[in-house]
Length: 146
Image 1 (cartoon, one colour):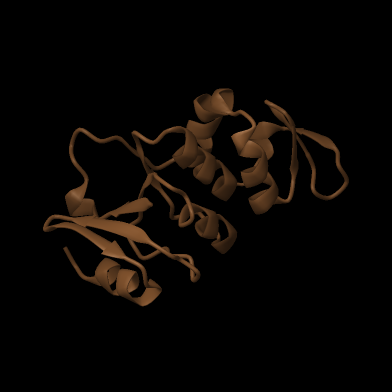
Image 2 (spheres, rainbow, N blue to C red):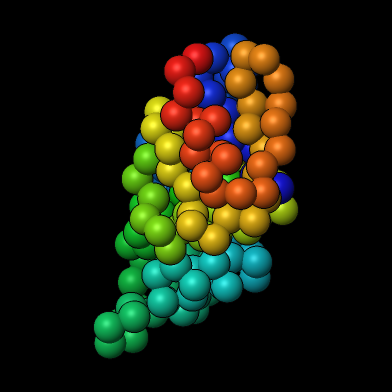
């Protein structure tokens, strides 16, 4: 289950990654394996040809893996780096759906970013950890000021 952090609850010892494109290109790309294939297909409708190459969804042209969308890179960052918190402010609905279906991971955003079909998530603020299984409940928690 994904854990959503409010700004006040992010421990000083935790790293928050705000620039997902750069982090992916410098770190996560080299970690990719077969687990990435489904995510790349689901979010960018592209085929992972090999570790550093994808096939364009438009005409199959071979592209470097750094051409993935920021949303796709964010999801892959979350999947392959469970020890870090990732800002999800640049994710579209297709990426958010995958994020909220992940078995684990940590995310942050200054404003509510929730997939409509969210099944379960944890929220962490200065008062503790809350579990949500409803979009509206998570949205209401997130909108409350710290």
